[in-house]
Length: 303
Image 1 (cartoon, helix red, strand yellow):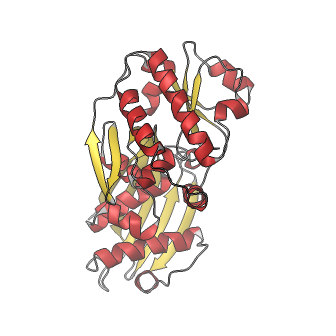
Image 2 (cartoon, rainbow, N blue to C red):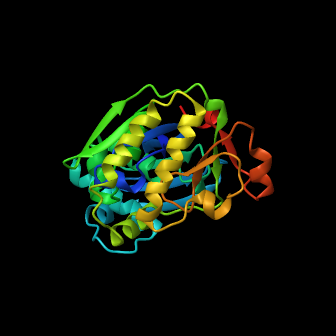
Image 3 (tube, rainbow, N blue to C red):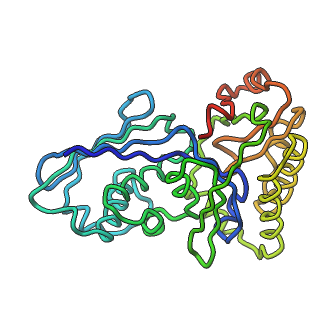
């Protein structure tokens, strides 16, 4: 019997890396995501194919049940080994799916370009968790790591506040729909950032954040409750000013867009993927002239 699963992509608006240490983050599920389609296949194996948004095949492998079940953990995994690791951890959480009398043909289909960084891995993990009927947060923890906000976005169709409390994910659905969303845009910086590497680098430079986390929490609450574009923009800029010294990185506006008339905030891993732009005027021509051709209005990006 064929099965189809779907998970939403994600954008983390506030909190960034500090969510790993218990900060509260505003996260927005996107209209883009990933499908996982399961059908029967040759016994004892998975014939796996992955397609980008334009139906381009970017991954094709045959995986035996045996190599998944007996996978030995190692560093610097290839794409194939990373997938096997995720499936291995899923199997450990539900050992009943793989048996000698079945096999699978599996395909994944993204509805956004793979390089956009909207959650290729998190949507895959959440879809596999649905397939195996296991907890996606636990599967993420055992396989890829991270705060889990992206899993929460994969599972929810509305804006959320996300926080780790004593290591456990807390998700609160909220009504975040400011009346100035027509002034918010998402611009792709033409550079894919690895979340896994970004998290590793964050932990290398890890310091005591007992003062910063309450500030970020206060800003997150204030940003959610913003009543005007001016207030929203000011709060975003304050957020950037707090995060910049923590990450030892210049803000994206200082680095690339210092003369821009509006606010620009990094999202997720600084230095790549999308930034959020708040501008009274449509900024498309400005960013296109700078070489950034992907500008997505809020209404086209966010669920």
